[in-house]
Image 1 (tube, rainbow, N blue to C red):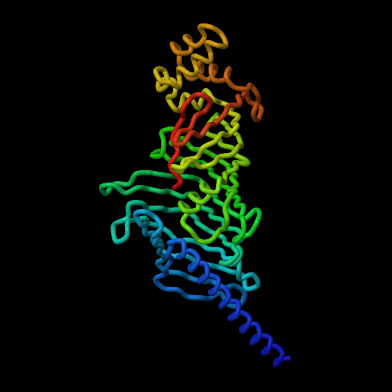
Image 2 (image 1 turned 60 degrees about the vertical axis):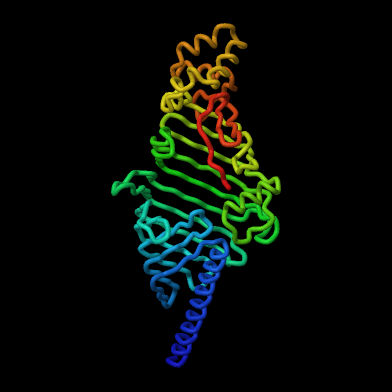
Length: 359
């Protein structure tokens, strides 16, 4: 019996060391794959443990150099812990230790990120990735300027999930991406983004030839050249009393901006317009002219009244007349086109913002 126990322990130890080696090969493979895309990861020091049932890799003073960015960006973190079960070495769970800093190479940080918990999971092999997820609990992003810190982003929770829905890494992959936000606010992005937002958005990228390691800018450029598209299969966004759901398809223009249209149903439009100061902004704008002209076609003189009394409620009522009346989650709502026009975003006839170029 003693001999059998010793043989079992020796066999298990050999198996653990073999699995640990396979996990290390997988980690090195992911690093090599990322390096081909211009993202170089490194550790100040690295140890492997977790015997007998897990494989744990501790990376102290983790860093990443994103050479594909222009200009390049250097990211540093306190460290990270990578865990794999001995029976499943190709599923890597990583926990990141903050704070995380973002800076130009060799310079002082200009972005500092903290969180309560930050984790990622990667399933598959470097040659055939299947699924990637990132989860942040209570993240806080701050910009450092002149010795002062300015809040850029704060949220209760952020989740990003990606998987290959159809095809394979080497042949016409269709990639599904899911973004979930809970109580997220970004005051520097836009005044309206200073109010907390909950969102659940699913998008599908179609038109890629393969998913070889490349910077995302190059990936989107390839998508545009191939006539690919981004399908928004599900989107729900809530801010205060305003709820919006929608779906549709977008393509990319030659300048890299989204182009296309989503069909969006909005409840609480009045609250949204009031929070954006839209009435004051559009009283003398071409957008207001479009609304008033359309209202005049419905009922002569109605457009003039809307212009003179462009409050949130009046403008909301005017826009509602131009859309399709419906209900959303038990609330009165209107269905309107959300149009992306090579850098600009329009809700019905009203311009509500701009989009950055994706390449």
